[in-house]
Length: 147
Image (cartoon, rainbow, N blue to C red; front, top):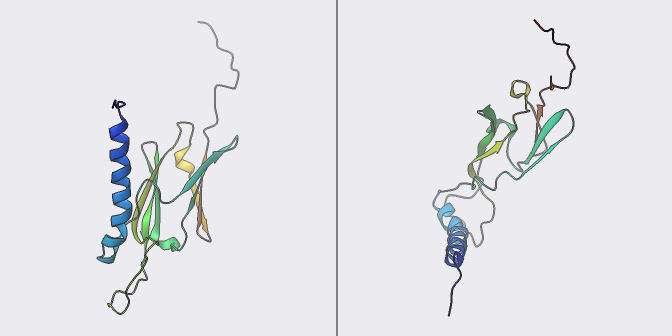
């Protein structure tokens, strides 16, 4: 039997992903609760002629627990989702699908963004970040005097 280059790596990555998914609820029971960076919060990035928009779903997270910052061409959304699980041992969880704990999501923003004027609005679990675009000076025509 022949094998294709890279196929073993795909299987390895898939197995690691499945192990992570299976072990997450186990570790959550013992207090190691976190939401994976690459997938939470889920976001949409879109634009119009004046602005870049980043919309993030943050269900069940209080506004006071969300922090946003901009540095070096990246927007960072971070915070923590408070857990309401019964910790006293009075209940036995059969299935745990909801995630609690700290999260951090980094989004690259284009150079055309004016990061000094970023605005954010949070309503009903939806965070909308608006980043104005830099007005291009190149479109203006200017006469240059020759010396």
